[in-house]
Length: 269
Image 1: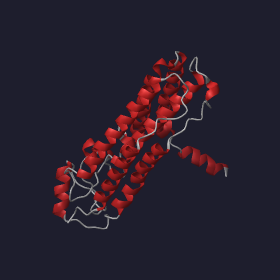
Image 2: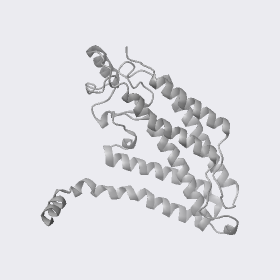
Image 3: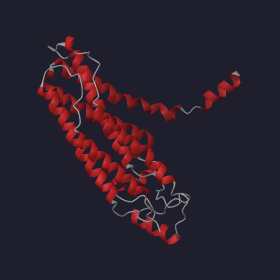
Image 4: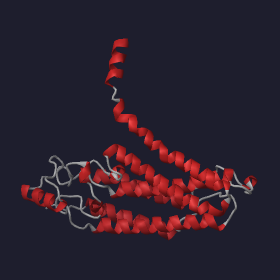
């Protein structure tokens, strides 16, 4: 038994994991930033939220670098392309976690706050916001399933060659059917967010993705500004994150539904 244990320890590649300590650095910086800003009261609470958003984005960049040797590596999927659904889920997570952590720390540490009026760590997430995050998570789960159904198709050699040329790669890896993959994570590019996922429409604008990206940027940007203004407007303890308007949630739901329907439609003759 000791022999097998020694062999397992000997085979453990510690070099592969020695850099993962860097992933903790942004989290430590978030704790320091919030504690320092909270020390000066609620005057800069909105800016503390923006700083936390930035540091959480840095955390995702560090993880992406450790996994795929690229800052955007956290959003690269098994096709070696940047995934729009992964990016959306990551962005919603960053915004909501930044709001929750800022509210909790300021409720606990901000000078002059009346902590007796609210449970410091009991910050409510509105139902509309949970629904918006659920819609984004649904796309994250459904997208690989939809694409996997197209791996049984067999594009022609000419279609594969044309798709590789449009995607600016040497070749499209075989064995993925009509799904347009790239040879290596280093080939992933921001253009993947707005171009087709199949051999038949690879390297060409995908209107479903373009619509989804623009609406997501609008909603996320608006909500981040809404949180900032809400945090800056009052010095009172924060009992809940700002609620999303129902029309925004409807717009997000319709956008995701059309995005998934367009992705499910065949694009490779």
